[in-house]
Length: 202
Image (cartoon, rainbow, N blue to C red; front, top):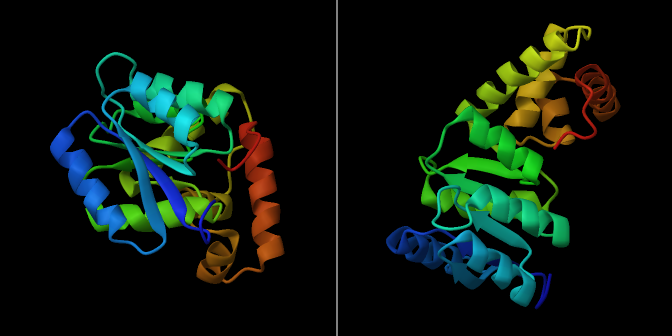
């Protein structure tokens, strides 16, 4: 990050009114700079190459190059850039495609626009974010995949941990919420990743 650890953000959305409103809210935050806007995926990729933002807020449905493919290209070329998908789409396929493409967060536009600034800060702190309703969808999908692979099913305790990961909670927050030590949370996460054959909590 540049200029006294201010977070540099690019907003990519084809709806100008939403994009401008979001930009105004983010620019009101002392630690956030909106360095650019894009109205389609191709422009978003070009702007990331030019401006090197810390965080991209990416819509899914855009003309030309869509948000999923733009996310994939940005993540491949600039893996240090954190991408939060911000969309009206609650389709499970879009969620899974976005995560596979490299998004670190997936939020529905039903969230308060003021909460987006908090989301930006959280991903810069190393957290991943999912809208609660989409976290439930992801858990169902992971359970299905686990069953298909004939893996050992997750315990109730592991599901409790996984749900909180889906809500974007840190290890410290999960430990406090479930009355565990952070080392116990890390052990639970290691077991979850092994059972679901995943490389990371993201």
